[in-house]
Length: 418
Image (tube, rainbow, N blue to C red; front, side, top):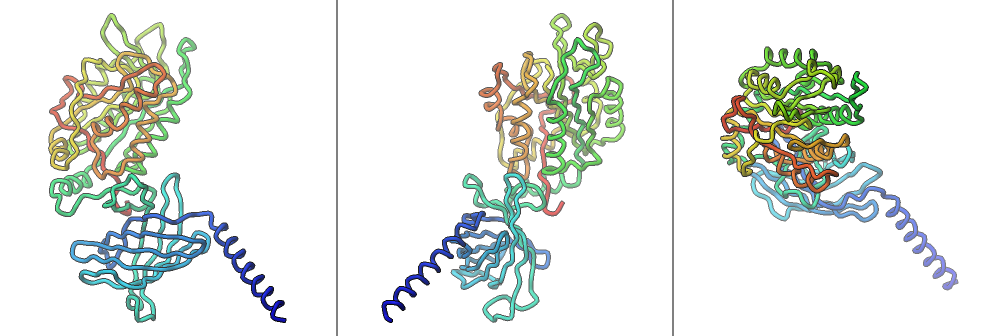
């Protein structure tokens, strides 16, 4: 009898361990690691960090919170079911100011490379937690190992991003100023040409569409202020510039992007864009770089950034050192700018542009709230040189005789809830 009970007991233990193993293996999402973001109480934003340790459907770890006057660190435990986590605070390791242990219900989601946990914290009838009826939102993003541990996440579909420190006067002043200004974009993509003597391209419209989505999703370019022209003729491009000249004010910012064929005329020492109705036998429908420069000079924006695959005179560029601190970025914003960023000098560029590939990638993956065009350029310049099939060297610098006074275009990440 004893032997039978012993065998039964061992069998039950094995069954239990087997079930536990199946349970562990069934968890397709590994939540272990750091998650950073914000929690909210009566409109107050509180920096929140969770260090999660997972084994099967069991969770434990540490929660840290911080705002201007309060901070705390506590332990928690919990469980998960599918993509839902339930956590409960256990005890404080330390606490400065107000704070309480809470129950937190979170739901996991993923958008591309960005993983999020969103839900609510709340008090319960358990006297060890926050008071019943007290609650607020929680929004967390998985922190990748290379990320700054002080980052605070943004909401929506944008990536987790760093924040400007509370005592960084220049940075906060610039964020406030840029939040009150409009960002415009004119995005031109030509890949289908009427003239059979001009080779059609495969990628400009895809590249342009991706750029439009990134500017609207991750930065403060509203949809109504973005114009996307697909295979436009010369007249439509000129009309778009005229419309922007009438619409944009001296407090606004403008990005002009062109993907398509560009030609350099050695005799005229002039570069040209080729619209959809261009003909190789005549320059009548071509758009010269001098025309583009005149429009950029005439549009009353605070900052204009031209991004193009087409040739623009190499002598127009002068690269400078990159400045990272907020005071320097503020000074760059105060001075008007007319800058150009191109995929090369006077070389032809391939249809499948590594320049546009890295431009879009680095705009999407940027975590800085404020990013100057020069900083952006420096993040991917070497990658383009190393990965281009023809050794193209991207260029960045002021557009001559267009009104540049030494400033720079500043991209602003979308703020919380925008």
